[in-house]
Image (cartoon, rainbow, N blue to C red; front, side):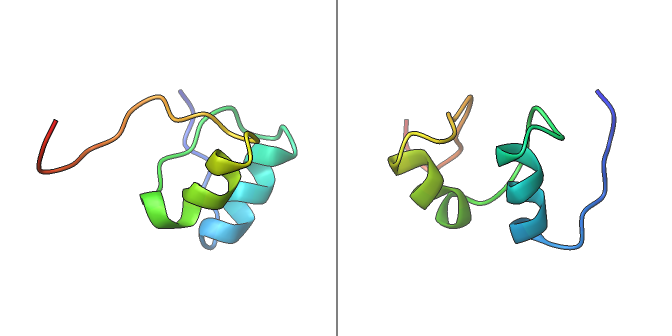
Length: 50
């Protein structure tokens, strides 16, 4: 896995949606709209409860 630095979540999401990167680590709030629309898929999620 190669680290690709972006200057924020929005440019990183654009890179993910545009196919420049294959995975992204981010907070659920910023990923939720694209996840809910089916554009991205969550591989893992963290929380206080299972």
